[in-house]
Image (spheres, rainbow, N blue to C red):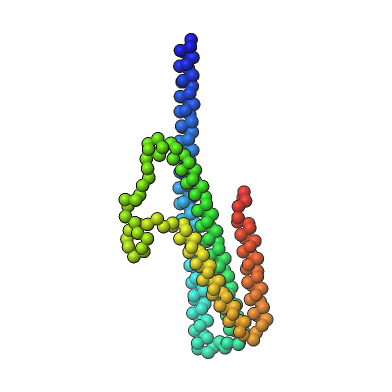
Length: 220
């Protein structure tokens, strides 16, 4: 009787271990699928938002081409209303592109946060059950690497961080251009439209703060 009981207990333990292993394998597969899904849609969202950024750059560049052409042809005088209006339109385009750049940064950081959660969960499963049992050491020191951008060797640059930096760079450029047009307007004698530009900046800042609060965290 004792031997039968021990055998039965051993079978139950093995069954529990098998069920646990199957469950962990299923969790591991689901985490991989979720991670791949997030990574795939990250690039799709990037392409979608890139189209709007390209349109923003194109709109600003095209308008500046027309504006500067008329200015150098003396069709627009420095202290005229037309000059102020052109700068006001330029500031508006800079604000739109700045908001798009902010959305790019938030989208990239949000996607990076999502797939890093999946990767950390995968590592927590992989390390104790694969690396420790098989005594495998991940070592890439024998791979030829170089941080020099003029060499063709690989290096451990973060593509997601580069994407975030692109958004920061775009935001910096359009903030600088918007400030430049704002200073140009302050040099003019048409103060009423210059005041309107200040209102545009304030509204843009409030809109961004409201948008950032709505898009940060939350269950929805």
